Image (cartoon, rainbow, N blue to C red):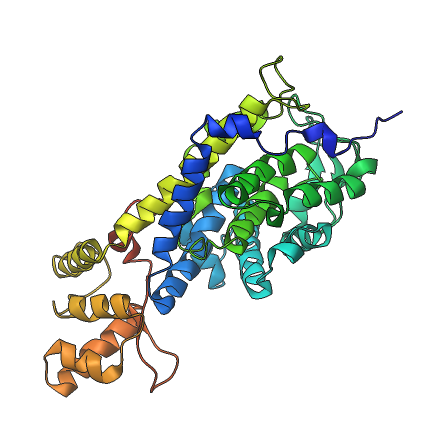
Length: 402
């Protein structure tokens, strides 16, 4: 007979007061909130452009953690309908696109914490992802590579599983267990730095419960991103937590596994699971998030962005970017002003160029054709953009190139 698993089985929910007081977790949580808030000061239009670009980056890194190595340029090709002729690679491209679609969907829903922390919402995230995933990637196989089941989009796990040494809760307990999980981890129950710490703890406990037959990692990371935004980190779309997790994937998986450990003696908290291991996991998550925030913040400093835009223009003119013609140096000033302002009025773009109107319009037409500027209509302002050929210059080391 299966034993009932309750929320008591994954205590502590967050480290106790004494443990937190003697750790760096509260300071790191507050630093993350503070540094992330600085990014929210970027003009809204520019922030939205960066967030849209990061959807591909986030998809790449989140799927990379699960073994899908489809590169960003391959994802973008698939978005344009150019799929690999290799069926297996094509399916992985579709999986990457499915992840992007879920991000779009979550952005449109704009869940507050109350709606986000519900079983119905998590099932919806899972459903939105898997309904766009090819049939071949819904198959569950055993160690002999035999198909033993299929993932049903949005459906909680219907069989017992084991994940390495961890045996998650019996599937019969999942409905009540998930409700308890959302009750105890709703960030509205916490204040200050504990809101952030609770989100990071919930990331592990969600994986520990393993509510779905497959896709728990992706759904868990999507939940964490959405939860951070819902508690006030408006810049979460500008920086990418999954990039940091993927770049230290072995450590991420190791600490997830260690946080499954039972309590290690009387000095390891009072819950069923190890408090020390949970704290180590939270410390890693906070460090990783801070690293990604600081990486993007450094790149977006005005003087540094200006220098990189200039470097991009120089690379164009030195023939170091294949397939693109040279471009007038004043283009860098136009692009920089579009970045800083969020939107650049047409008359201002012409004025900044310092060129005769006809020549200025030819230059602007070139910038639009090459994806460096966009517009919503023939009379709208211009908006800064991040075409693939400019990404290595604007955001060095953001993602691997071709």
